[in-house]
Image 1 (cartoon, one colour):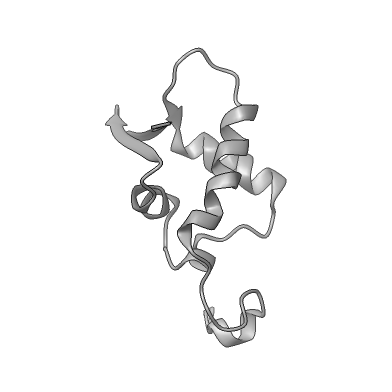
Image 2: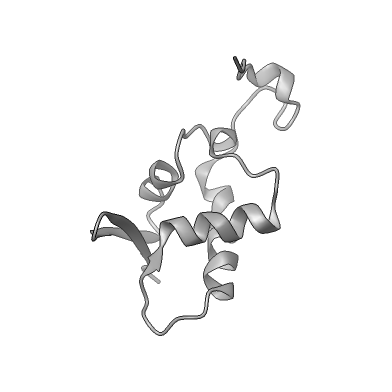
Length: 91
């Protein structure tokens, strides 16, 4: 059983990072995905983030899932398509 005690993680000195700190990671993943549509699969975004940042954990931002993290960011819009969550940039 994992103990997610923030004081032992050492990443943030016991606190959580703001969700906005994840924006560059998401934008970088979007740039690496080749597609014609403006909508990106959240699963694919997550795979690219983890591939580049193996220590990435949504709990660092106070969220249990990537979908929760993205929904808190006003920079992205989400939609559900065929049981898959997709996101796109609003800017």
